[in-house]
Image 1 (cartoon, rainbow over the protein chains, first blue to last red):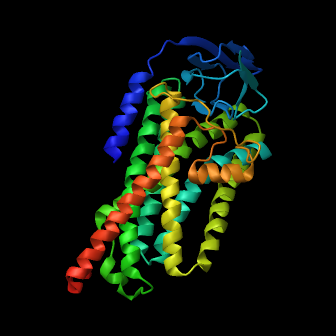
Image 2 (spheres, rainbow over the protein chains, first blue to last red):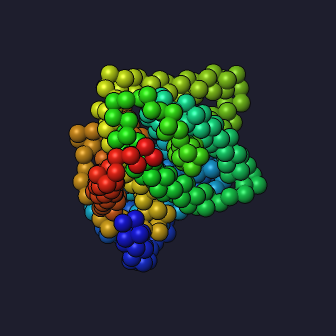
Image 3 (cartoon, rainbow over the protein chains, first blue to last red):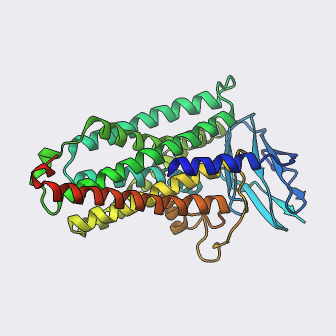
Length: 105
Length: 283
């Protein structure tokens, strides 16, 4: 049964390699740069979240269903895809005054 | 200060609940040796989480953030496997016990199962532990002044509060009779495993390895917000998310009937074995 599930996952993994666009998202003391990202509906995005502060941050979004810790000075790639038009907010869970949004049109 | 406490409460809650359910189960079934292994797994994970935090936070970080995330996803999926195996074994165990604990000496836990218990506790604590270490590290670095110790204390209080939450939660289980208790913990552990599977899948989607198929199947934020107390509790226990992707929903909802089928098969096997010869039931 679990072998079947694994097989299904592998098929899905193969289907994932669609075209993607990279978007840089920096986190500094004052917040996210840029504070707002625009994207087209259905687009596959690779958010490159760079932590420019001296301590760990956590990129988090309930709307996007994503959560990633970024150590200081590092960059992580967070993938989102197939989004419908709307406003998707994200924040730094460790410093919640830092907020931003992905606007899908 | 309050924010530090709340963040640490949330980061520690999942670990506390999973370790709590294992300890409660073992205490009820009189398996003291098993409890030691759970504690060993949990303490080992704290050490490993600190080591990982140091390895990924220092200037000469040895492990890239993506490799770390893949490792975390691997730990989660491994935990699902071990937990499923444990539930199957517990199910057989519960059948044997019935209402009678006198035979407990005959059913001493085999080493493999003890290691399994330690592995689940390790996975639960390690996962949240790395985040907690990085967060607290940040708290200390940011406030290199007199307020750092106070904030650390707030963080420790948050973790203690998570342990208290888990303790209160499982105290409620003390009122169940033994058979109901085993049934309820069995179902709860299956939901926990399904939640861990979903969390692992979520990480692989975020890493770009899997397609969400549909990024948001539904939105139950109007009913239960992710950042509410109940939302956090259900999130920690069974992986509740207000806006899951289709692949996550599929993973969760395929796992449960699959395990139901495996449990049913174990029942059928046990029944036909006892029909063949009652003398062999004391395995």
